[in-house]
Image (cartoon, rainbow, N blue to C red; front, side):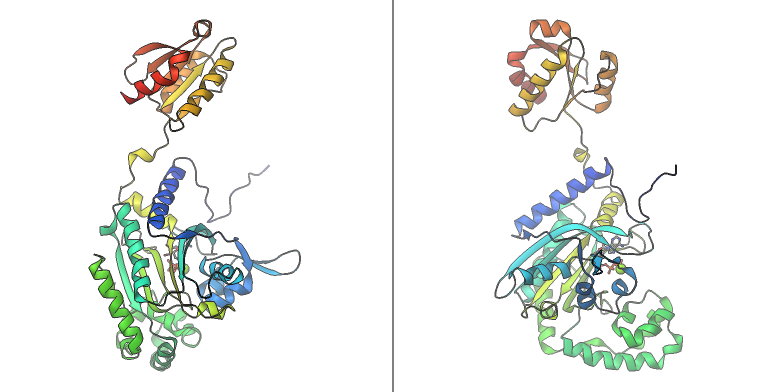
Length: 425
Ligand code: ATP
Ligand code: MG
């Protein structure tokens, strides 16, 4: 029979790798806690129209990347391609947004039908953060500083660059779009194919076309700065000064527009040159009209998403993962002989109750002593507890230091205490 394999672009995260994931998640959670953010958990599947209405009909995600299907009730559902829409839906549904301040985070898988390659998968993971009820530059600054502090916690803040832009008000963007479309139509024949199509559907996206020729033609495009409203300008100025006093440096990128329709004012991305063309590790911005667009009462909002796979690739690339995250037992318990398992289980349970932080593996293979000892050596444990029939009869146990081979015999009644003393040496 043919073997069943995982779906292309959807990865298993195996032991060895999963330790890195736990370390990353734990460290990020600590920073989120430090800033007072609370977790929200949403379903992975939502009604398709939630995404078309929020992300935008003519975005890459909705046009070609969504996993959409009819359920048994003929309702169109989609696997979530990102978390913001579901978070806003949940916030409206449960009355978390109107007249309230929220600082929320979530973590989990997202799904996009893309061409799988390094740093780009069909199931990937994001840690997402969303804030509601604050229209200020302060909260935009806080979000960016939060991401900066996350990078600092991993010791990589020098290896990743913050790119910053403002998209102005909705009105400013509408006026700019008219001028941009006019300009683009004038050079239409020279643009790459995707950009030509986007002139009528999503002209701002032409600005971040990956095509080199298109990019150089854009040097002559109307300058968005001439269209930005005064309020967005002063919001942006304040944001920049708050970042400066907080020690977060940034690069202005006037072509940064991001791939989703719902952004206004602040947009930002954290990018690295260490991951080839999948260099954006984290992206976010302000989305003041989304809550109303999804049927709630208007509430200002901003947030970001951090791509966990790309982040881990970067940590590996920079070689900053600490040795200590490897999952290694401190104690390996071997037992062989008649009646020994009973004592092995009794003593292990007693040790685990007494020392919840000591990492103990109890051999359950049923093999002979020699094979169990080999397993103990291979496990990386520092100490081996050895129980045979002789020890059983005398209610004793051998404690062997696997680094230097030294052994001592300990009474069962003294094991809790002695084990800790030996480990602490
Ligand atoms: P890109 O331009 O690389 O396609 P994006 O703009 O589509 O990214 P966002 O929607 O802003 O990405 O998602 C936030 C983050 O999630 C990205 O910065 C990236 O780190 C990660 N991400 C997005 N798509 C994928 C994917 N297919 N595989 C792995 N990570 C992804
Ligand atoms: Mg994308």
